[in-house]
Length: 253
Image 1 (tube, rainbow, N blue to C red):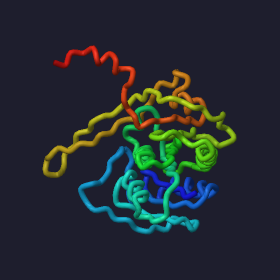
Image 2 (tube, helix red, strand yellow):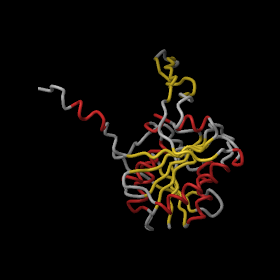
Image 3 (tube, rainbow, N blue to C red):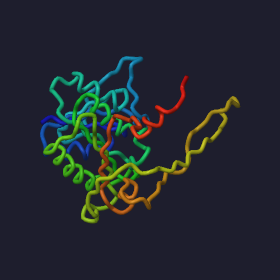
Image 4 (cartoon, helix red, strand yellow):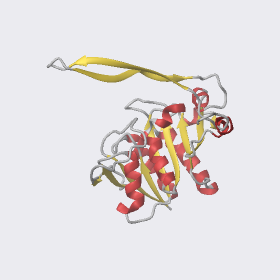
């Protein structure tokens, strides 16, 4: 088995390296990640300019390359042939910070798994609930091995992937694994207006870190808050099937 490891935090991110080393248990590993941080860039795919790929040394004799594009670019380029060996599975992460609830629409880490799924490859995205630059990824890497082992043994239906979030705890303090659904994130964004030396306004989108409803049992947000690894199955069919019948009663003419 040949496994592609990618991320959105950048090719030199410690979570990427931890995941790549952990995946050696299952076969040959190749790393292709963005040369710069691409967090919150979502499923952006570069079609308007050329892309360049460069070999990078991330240690431990890991075959690694950086791409001057997005996480989706990294996966697409690899699967489409910039690396000649065929790819059987894509794992993305380990992201610095959780990807819960509606974070999936923003996350470059999850977008890499989306792209892999579109390219008909098994895909899992991993995130650690710790945004610190000094985060310890050892427990998350161990959890990733346990999840990937099950994916290899059981497979996934077409056009589906797993979004996995790991609590910021030593592995022996994690309570277990929960299969979850997406919870409801609460975003606290704020627009800051500032002025350059010429007096022209510019803007930062900032604000406090998002929260979420921790009281609804069975969601990814609840699981992480209560010390469980959250495993959320995600499908690329985003149709609101429950709305179809009622929409048919609308009068569009």
